[in-house]
Length: 103
Image (cartoon, rainbow, N blue to C red; front, side, top):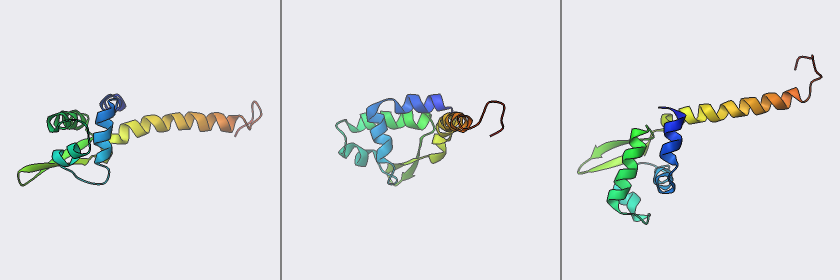
């Protein structure tokens, strides 16, 4: 997965709320829907998008599915964001050195 697919999946506010609802641990569609102003089928559709982006995984437990965050699904996004920090910290270090001097 790419950071772009992660950003696209998390761009929708309801989808972000569904994703954040899984931070504490695995939950079913019904559990997630109880705390949202959308229907269970809508939550299922949001989970489908999150799953396609590699952000959640599902496992069967009896008649229901439990969804969990796939933390490694955030790796591409984190790597991309960290690259900005590298640039910022490099520029900060350069501001303390004289031109032509090594940091």
